[in-house]
Every structure is written in structure tokens, then in C-alpha cells.
Image (tube, rainbow, N blue to C red; front, side, top):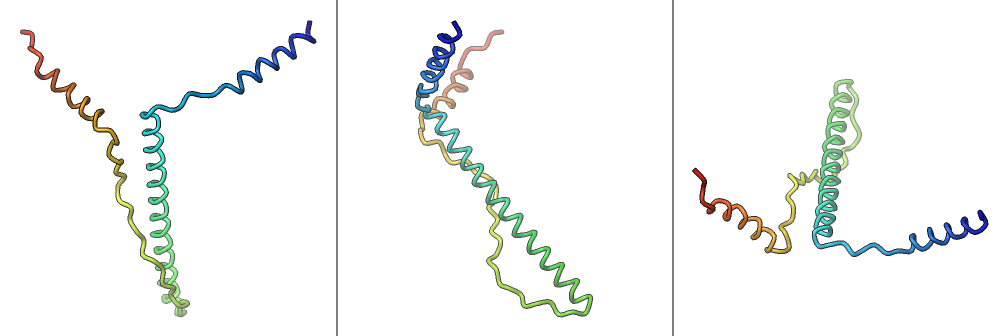
Length: 115
């Protein structure tokens, strides 16, 4: 009995592994794109913070070297730190969703009120 059930279970598992997932919806694609944009912006913020930190360390090193009476090494010119600013999500690709969302509150506001 085990000799039949084990290969049958393995064959069933192989068939389910080969099943394809449905294509993502437009909403899922938009969420994935926004998540990627947030991640990219987060990386830019981290790079900016690292740049500012390096500048503070270099300034501290130069100040402490001068205080100790030593001449710090030649200063290397580096590009200025670029502040990425706050995250601004990209506008929605389809105008239908915002229009539908705006129409819903208008419909509720125009409904007669009960006394």
C-alpha cells in the first residue's frame, strides 16, 4: 500500500508545483511600483544621511587635529550631499479611480438627511 501511495503523493505534489499563478492586477502592479519607489527613496535618504555623517566625522577630525597642533592631510573635494526631500508618490496612471473616489462623497452629501 505504501509503495503506491508515496509515488502518487509525489506525483500530485509535482503537478501542484507546476501550476501557474494568475497575472497580477493593475492595482497590484501599482502597489508594487509604489513600494519600489518608496524603497528607492529610502535608499536615497540613507545615502544622504551617510554623506552628512561622513562630513561631520571629517570636520571633527580636522578640528581635533588642529587642536592637537597637527596639520590635517589635504582635504579631498567630494560632491555635495544631495537631500532627496520627502517622498512624493507618483500620480495615479488612470484617472478613473480618483474620479470614482471623488464622486462617492458627493453622492453621500447630496443624499437627503433624515430628521
